Image 1 (spheres, helix red, strand yellow):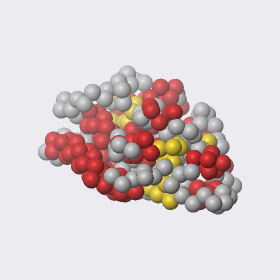
Image 2 (spheres, rainbow, N blue to C red):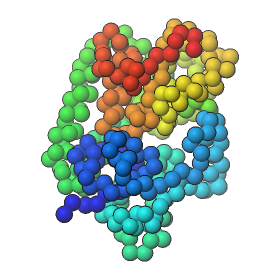
Image 3 (cartoon, rainbow, N blue to C red):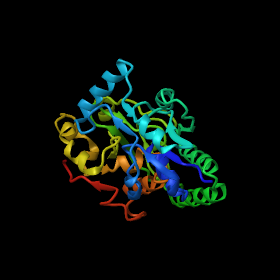
Length: 309
């Protein structure tokens, strides 16, 4: 019998579906929205902060909750109890990004008789994502198909690297994961920039995303800036651009003056360590070397900002 699965992590939901096991999903988090078919599945979590607030206000709410040792998410234990899952997928990497393993276990302890197996992901680099996918395939009983899916994704990465590894012109790239206050992208993003033929200037591969000071941004002054705030799609980023444009240093940045500022869908691509990190790599390759790469992601996964914006 196939296990009944609840996923409290958007990237895990995408992994499960990529493995051909969407029929085993019986519950999801409020943020699991891809593929579109999963939106019919019952929701088992809710945010305790206002996700529609400004970047600065979201940051204030998060820090206030964490300072008081409060969870950022509510787990609907009664709903999970009714769904009777055999496996629950969650994460142990970031208390801000999704329900953590600790929070989930605490919630489940209140549900007498509910003892699902908890599978927790904590990826820091692209290789960790492959491992998570292989682990998910094993848990779901589809090891062989999982190996095939992973191999296909890896080959798409190799196709990009084979071209960029020979490039001597590598633009400096700054990836911004939060707008106010500024945060650079870490974890898997720096290595994606490298694979895409760029030179990452902020954050380190395999390390958590660091806060970024405007002084450091102006000092390193990268050739290209990619805005990919966590959880924000492109229209949301465009709406919040004024927080950057108001800063006196913004208009003086090399990337701004040369029209090399790009808005990328952080929510659906760069912030989710799942199969679509391959699309994220392709997006960066298009941004870094538009004369070589065209995967068709422009205007769907990323857009350039007009010069001076």
